Image (cartoon, rainbow, N blue to C red; front, side, top):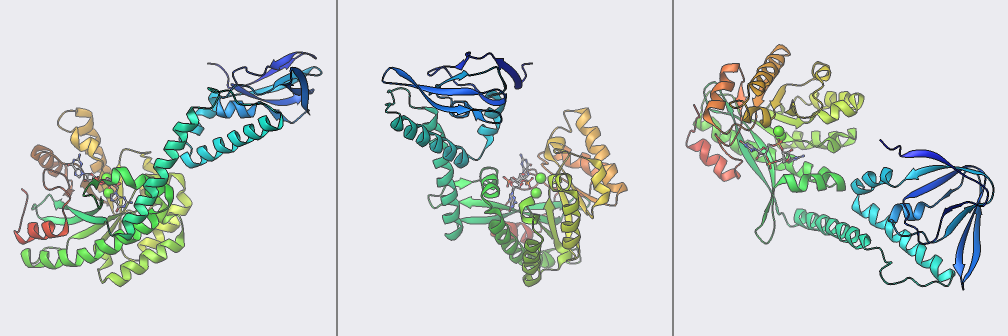
Length: 403
Ligand code: C2E
Ligand code: CA
Ligand code: CA
């Protein structure tokens, strides 16, 4: 495997790179000195002398344009070579806007430099990948603007997916899932917009809204349920929380105020969080979860088994429910291993006094197998898709049970 950072030596008078060469590396001077020169009116002109601790060649490394100058060692020089490949991945995954800004700054700098040196950019030398980066950044700005407008124009809706009590087959709860119905009628699923909402921080606002609407609708669902299923426990409302919503304790106070104002019994409110929170910052997670638990709500760990699945945190946090991810549930009938995993997750949760929701039940045999394993709740397309409030109410009014 080629090393990405290594040292290289140049003797006095030796050229490191020439103007026009492809630019793959940047160099950090460990010892010695170099001279940077450009061609002006056919003559070499030295534009800079650089010594220990200085860096050169970084522009071409970042924007992949040919070298705009020649660098020559003026004495025996040792440099650390920083290869472009090392920066490709972080550059690709960087926020497109940051990427664009970096490239624009570089392009302007090169333009200014060229002007200063009386050089003109040749056609074809213009960086084409800049256009790609520009369009990515614009897509993103537009998506952000659309989302902001969508929120203002009340284009977001909450849908509710029944969570079925496997023993008895009635509804034990609902999961509130966000939907974005654009003005043109197109429908965007959270798989497409939650990440953007998280990256832009808009999830904090959307999340408050989701909690508010989810709890308001919970009152209506619980009322209808009480009539259709007298004597059965009130169905809980499960609300998804993004880690970002819990990153500041002050935000938890705001969420607490929403729950308080809603009139819903906190014991019927379940907040779904993912493993990431607990694994990445366990100390903060402990404080945040403690604060949530003080409100009297239930906490569920979502998508269990897909992320870090570090078992050590399970008993350290006040968790009430474990949601088994649908990949295991879906493969139960096809793979002995998936069956074993589900079996052990169920055993683990029961041993820790948590209850279990199996997600993604698409077929009746899966539901039956899960019930047999001792899993209390199930959720999936086999029972019902997520529904708008009126359809969820209709399901209750029809006293629907799944057995
Ligand atoms: P999730 O929390 O794991 O939600 C369950 C997802 O599985 C939902 O997708 C649901 O429609 C889907 N699902 C339910 N049953 C089945 C099934 O039998 N088969 C299959 N293939 N899928 C099933 P959805 O609604 O597209 O949501 C995707 C993700 O977006 C959610 O995953 C959650 O992480 C996030 N999300 C949704 N609403 C919110 C929200 O209000 N706040 C936050 N922070 N995240 C949300
Ligand atoms: Ca969830
Ligand atoms: Ca899930």
